[in-house]
Image 1 (spheres, rainbow, N blue to C red):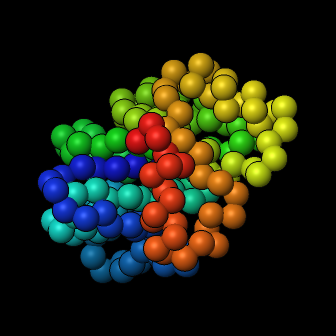
Image 2: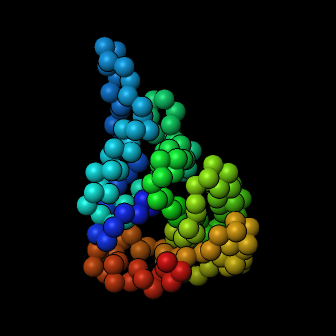
Length: 173
């Protein structure tokens, strides 16, 4: 997820591309730059909101369009145009997360995209040794801070209950 910051307005949530939506394929008109199209969607939100959260479900390198553009490409495109972008990487708690998260953070940093930190997306009620060690090791292997952990099952909470509890889950934010 990356966060273009603008002024002092509420937060907007959007997806990098709508599931099932296909980019226009009109052979009579030249294809528009796909990154610009995604950025235009984000720009609308930035006019009314301080923070725009872009969900990159599936990962940083999931294809967003028929030209092979990825969420990473979009973030780089925005950074190159002096949009104030911060990325928060949402990671897993269990086995494999150190490798996956280090690769994700490394890919972002290699392309010049700033990473604000990490959030564990589903922290178990009873973490085992792997989860506990990963929580301690994630900042060391990635070089970015752990901002917090969202408890498993939090997505089932109502909006008001979730909002009231979120600050406690993300003390590093």
